[in-house]
Image (cartoon, rainbow, N blue to C red):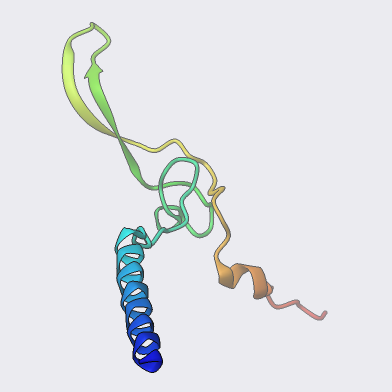
Length: 104
């Protein structure tokens, strides 16, 4: 009789653990994949590799002409001049390639 009580208690504890585990797992927020972005809200892929200037566009809402006439929404070039977001992993550990030196 004593053994059946401990087995029943063990099954109840096991079932309660399964139930709590399922409830906690469902409430946990899903991981969101993020990409590194610059202060201008564009990623590294929108910036030129050599000059680091942004080639992306920004939506300017409710644009008006110089006369004050409503034009509508307009896409304009981003004014970001340098990527200031996180550095890619490869740039941290790879030394820059130097041009060949002339030995004269």
